[in-house]
Length: 327
Image (cartoon, helix red, strand yellow):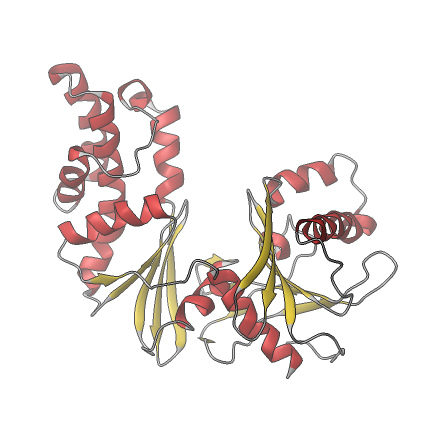
């Protein structure tokens, strides 16, 4: 945690969610967790790191990232037509603390309290290069898995649920399964489901058999893929897509849905085996629909937390961190 205790405006904070492929900045009301203003950028950490490394100077790396962050805060000020008080700090989570981020921080370890999280946080004090307090939040590791950003999302989700226990699925390119007991994250696993789908659909022998265009809702082949994933060998089932296309002209949209069902069904087969009492499902609206359909096929009970439109789960998680810093 942070050792220093600066004095600053407690009514608001800036929430920065800097992921691999995106950048989001929000002005948050600290008392309610509501978003007041927000902006986003496509310049995620991966793209930004390439920009920095093309003119590599490790002594200026943090300055390079902070300069971009400062410009984004100025853009946020323009969007809300008001200058933000310099005493309003910024909380930064996601890939900004990774090896390609603004400063690499070591992972915190399990278990993680969701009420009083002990995360590694680096305090960047105000200076001429950046005129406000910035707090860089690290990720979490187990003995064989890591994550950055999802731990903050989990804090936000759990803060809106009454239960102290749960099995969370954060659907994404790299989906996370997180087990919470007595308000502590005790275990998690990462699944490369989305990335594997993209690789198979675009780079493998199945590329000519699969339509890469995604629909907001799963097609009729999706549920068949989920069911087959519980019984068939995945490697054989994948090739069967090619065979079915050649022999029976099954169609690229149906093949895409079947492929998606196979991979999500394979991911969820471990959930079936672990028999959680309830699954808490989160992700973007399209992925939630796909995972919800798969969970229904497998007979797994799940809920989707009701998060208000002016709330963001990352900002809600950062609000917990902000309150720890200010109290």
